[in-house]
Image 1: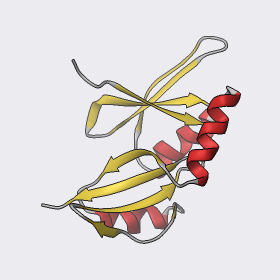
Image 2: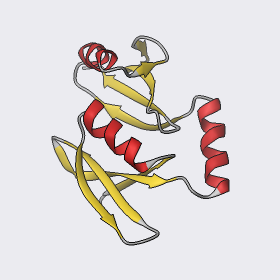
Image 3: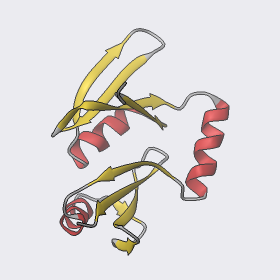
Length: 128
């Protein structure tokens, strides 16, 4: 058994694709449009096995749930990095809106950012 796909609801697939590739640095893996359904995934450049599915948030219950999670600042995903301060500086320079600077909490240092598509994402660096 393996974890292969992680779904994240987005309000606009094209906007999400641009953010996750051009801003964060992920790589587009699949983009299949079959009429009403578009299968769109991105992967980290160093991990082509786990795909982040950029799923359209078209159903009313899903939009309401996403908005409630966003308003409560619950993250939709967690991205692990090796040097959070360097990544924070790099992404801030690319216009990413963080809720604040990286903070250490327990065994990780983390920072929350807005993915521009209806979600907060946590960027984290585990302690050594």
